[in-house]
Amino acid sequence: MDTDGSDGPHGSPRSPGDDTTTQADLTSTSSDPESASGSESDDDDVSNTSGRSSKEESARHSSENDPTPNESESDPVHHSSENDPTPNELENDPTPNELENDPTPDESEMSIEEMLLEFDEQNGLIRDRSLLDPNYVVEEDRIVGRDNQLQEVTKMLRVALGDNRPPNLFLYGPSGTGKSLITKAVCHNISRICESRDIDFGTVEVNCQDLDTLGVAVYELTQQAAEEAGVDVEVPKHGVATKEKWDELYRIVNEHFDSVVFVLDELDMLVGRRDKQDPAFSRLLYQLSRAGANDDLTAYISVVAISNDTKMMDSVGSRAVSSFTPEDVHFDDYDANQLQAILRRRQDSFHEGVLDEDVIPLAAAFAAQTHGDARKAIDLMRVAGELAEREGDDRVRETHVRAAQAKVEKNRVLEVVRGISTQKKLCLYATAAVAAQTADGAARSTTGYRVYQYLTDAIDAEQYHQETYVNKMKELTTYSLVDFERRSHGPSSGMFLEFHFAERPDTILETLREDSRIEMVSEDGVQSVVEAQIQNQT
Ligand SMILES: Nc1ncnc2c1ncn2[C@@H]1O[C@H](COP(=O)(O)OP(=O)(O)OP(=O)(O)O)[C@@H](O)[C@H]1O
Ligand SMILES: [Mg+2]
Image (cartoon, rainbow, N blue to C red; front, side):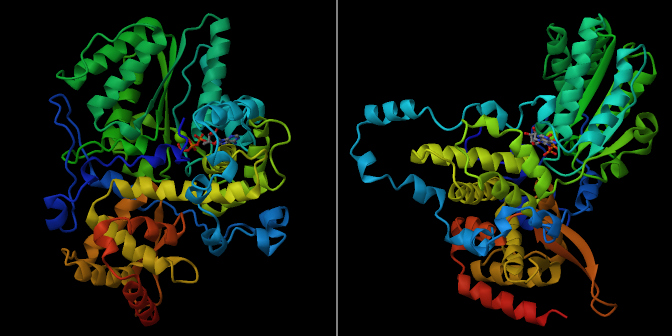
């Protein structure tokens, strides 16, 4: 389990060509091609910019309205300004490092054995860590606030229990809203009932986040199907045509199952290489659903596509759309009350009575403020518990949640920032510097670009055109750290993009300053440029 409080699937940036400043990065203009990773002979794959573009257009879940009045009414963290999780206060909080590096005098005199045995005696504060693991499928009575989605998915997939083909589904909504959990919970139940009825039902699930190409994805499906059936895959992973992998998948499914649900989680991430007309996810959907319709697959099959990107289906090619035709199920952000309810159903992950009263409301309020993400709320509770344990405290307190918030936020930013090129860092730094100074936390692309120009001048880096700066920022929306809306302030001001950050801009700036090139730029210099540029905005 990730003890660093990283934020699940989105915590690992995966753009293959993105990890260093390549020559192409420095010299490219608006197209900014990413290098295709690997060059498997079997992969007729693609990375299609149109696949990304729908992501770029994806609806922004704004954080500026959070917490809603309703949420704050029932929310103890808002009862006194002292407890209010304002960004300013967070800055004054002890950082996890301070907490970790500050042993009490007694501890520093203890031997290693004494410390180990003392910990043993305490037995920790967390009773059941699996309940705080984001990938663990919790029991049904711990699932709250998703009744409609649970019902819809169950009703649509339950036809697998009879002698019928379930429909294809498209589950979409922001990160941490229960899409994977609901799908897994329903499929587990169907499996259980089918077993008792002697129906060979299989769930073949893949997470597309780390799959580069269609060939890799088909192999992964084949491997999962083989595992579910308890057999071996009989084609090699590399060096064969994708067609052979498809045939192997069909063979395994047809020989071992009456009915299969294919779960394609985070499907929008399967873009593939750029030299094909359709993104890889579109071709995967087409082939799978077509195989279900003709005789390649004799078992009943249903495809459940899951995505953060509400507009993913817009970039699915017309051939795939006509054979896939899914039922849509939408997953919304959680509000602070729902997040509290989710956490309360898991408070028995801690020993009885060790959670201070404020812990759950505060963790829920923090998670609601950023994106209403249950994964983040659960992460905060877990990290708070771990920090308290590490300190040797006998309770989890509000201060631990605040320290956890700082740590989780920093980690999320770090994981995004670690994998990106210097040019993207400069774009991000300029934009975050603007967002840090505006009242509503929004940064206009026009203003951000001026600051970007200042930065590139200051460190003598290559300077891209505004269009490329905007494209780089749009590409960063993939990581859910930043989002944008198109805006115009009257006919004379023209169009611009307005960027919003899912985490505090100050954390982003602080993290980016760890890059030695960015560190060279004077903070005061940037600040005065930002102030002047904000004043210039019409
Ligand atoms: N309604 C809920 N009740 C209880 N726990 C929930 C609920 N929704 C989400 N969770 C928990 O929150 C975490 C994230 O949920 P899940 O993985 O289903 O999100 P997701 O929508 O698939 O997000 P992503 O798009 O990032 O993959 C998991 O630990 C899950 O158990
Ligand atoms: Mg998921």
